[in-house]
Image 1 (cartoon, rainbow, N blue to C red):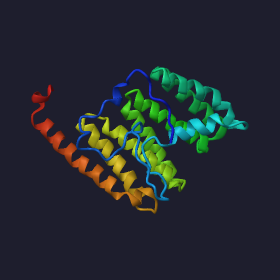
Image 2: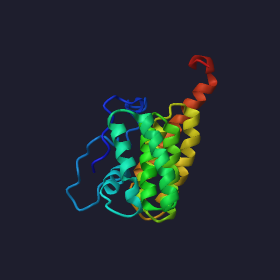
Image 3: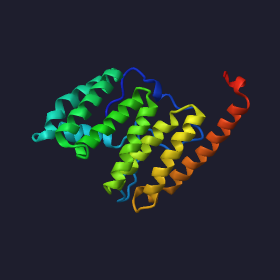
Length: 223
């Protein structure tokens, strides 16, 4: 699925996290994957809804959603040019305007919120990207859109991996796994992909070990 073109100037979060060698359960959004030749739908990846937000809103010819084609185009252009902070501010404003015009649960508003989470990720604001994506996952789950909810969980997991502090990672991971477990309890892609959830739990074990090591030798870690 096509997506927003990454900025020409590298953003800080695009560098692989320190744990990338062992935490390989997430496929980065910009990594091209081979498609399954069978009839199964494409695997859910993080920030999977961003391309839909761009393509579908830009293709809208009428209705309230078409009011946001122009700001979305400006956001896209800012991301392409590497003006990530500017794009983030415009995305926040557009979400606020769309929420007033269409309502908080309108599909286009949810797509714009996904876009905002993605831009926060590009901007290096992993914490905001995490919370935006996790909130969307819970909302999509309540709306019974399990595939979109799992995409949001993957987005939240990508942001979680970018958080370097092990103690903060533990707190965020508990929230992530709680929502993820709820999704996996129902039929859908989360239930079909339990291995990813188990790998997230394994990462929690490693984070706990790192947090204990940091607590036992704080001066060795610059504290």
